[in-house]
Amino acid sequence: MSSFVCLVVVFVLININNTRNVVAFSEYSSSDDDVDTNKYTRNDFASDFVFGAGTSAYQVEGAVLEDGRTYSIWDTFAHSGFYNGANADVTCDGYHKYKEDIQLIADTGLEAFRFSISWSRLIPNGRGSINAKGLQYYNNFIDELISYGIQPHVTLHHDDLPQILEDEYGGWISKKAVKDFVAYADCCFREFGDRVLHWTTFNEVNVFTLGGYDLGFTPPGRCSPFGILNCTRGNSTYEPYLAAHHLLLAHASTVRLYRKKYKAMQHGFVGINIFFYWFEPYTNTKEDVEATQRANDFYVGWFLNPLVNGDYPEIVKKNAGTRVPSFTKLESERIKGSFDFVGINHYSSLYVKDNPSSLEMDVRDVVADMAATIIFDGILTPTQFPVAPMGLQKILKYLKEEYGNPPVYIHENGQVQPRNGTLNDTPRIEYLQAYIGALLDALRNGSNTKGYFVWSFLDLFELLDGYNTGYGLYYVDMYDKELTRYPKLSAHWYANFLKGKNMSGILPNVDAIDSF
Ligand code: FCB
Image 1 (cartoon, helix red, strand yellow):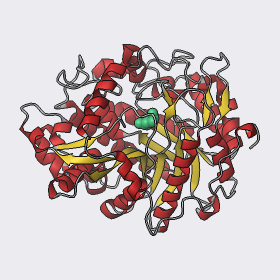
Image 2 (cartoon, helix red, strand yellow):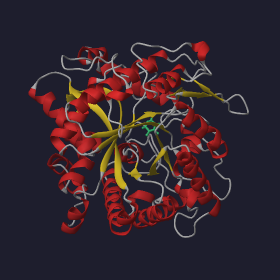
Image 3 (cartoon, protein in one colour):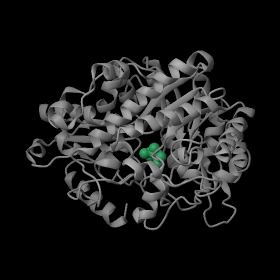
Image 4 (spheres, rainbow, N blue to C red):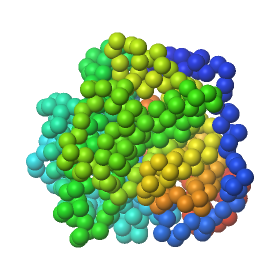
């Protein structure tokens, strides 16, 4: 996002919140039944609970036109100038450095690693023939992880539909994308499913839809001219609902395919990933409490309700009316239950206020249909999140109570900081320590969470602001042509935690940088 637009958005949102501050979240960062977040070890978690970290293809691989890869919508989006000239043409050069990276992954003691496959590297035309070099790359990557005993957790679509399909039929606003995605997934299951047991169809299916088709700040960057970004293409009134519908149909068909064709042989699991804020009502008035529920229904229920109950939430259908496509009876039956786990990405908690006047607008988008104001308070392009781990506990409780306690993987959680080369990332350690403690608390309260992945393993090309901020356990020096990786203090902290050490309030010494 251009920094000007960011500033405007942040300024407007900060000013909405002139009477209450997010610091208030620290009020509920602990409660009586909390685990003391300073006193736990790896051994307090079940041995089959997995800890890892993650990356995604476009953000880490580079080599964007090498060995047959073609552009994805994220390449195009980055090259359109959204990141003020930055792009991931090279980024961490993970494509060439994967052995070195997997060595680091193993040295850090990660038990599992989350990464994504670039569809346009594997199948450069979007459908049809497989690129032998792309296939070889992912086979090598998976084999290398497995040689260290590290579980691969693979995402099939992390904001990177092949551009060729966007050009041909408009990508996810066309139902044609469903068939092409299922064929691509089929190829992945066939080629890699003997070694990969955990598959996620879509990363942040809700952010991809809202950012890509309503607000325009993520690929493919489509929105109506009335939006903040004033896009040149798109329609925020209709397209988000259409894209969401096709993504859900593609997800359900993929799971159906896996269950029919591969499950008995490969014994794997297929899920979907959803971005979660924890929303708190801004005041305890009935209006704000109901607005908060609406915000949850529009952000999360939009996808989880069909998956759990076979249809969109009533409030989504009511407020968006005929703009929400309907599922046929058969589609609804097939979508319902079409997941083995829910992946969640969570970073922060936000307040929500009622905003009934948005329903009076003549032309509405999803945000207006929600009739709720989310108080972002600078969190859209943050430089450090408040530590409010209770948000994670509340999400897991919400999933337990509202959606039948499905198996969950926390696919992304981590602390953002300006990417300035410092290896002393104490705020990240404090954040991780608190959130992992909250997770343990949630598990003790019956959450069905199966694994936790830090975002991100390396500092990489970030979705919202390119190279300005980083979440990495490892710093990557972009100014060094070798793109050398350096462990931050958080990498040491996590490695020691994974070794079973008691890390109570321990901040590793910066001088001990090479010794795990
Ligand atoms: C999420 C994306 C991920 C990363 C984090 C910070 O929205 O899934 O790729 O950029 O945000």
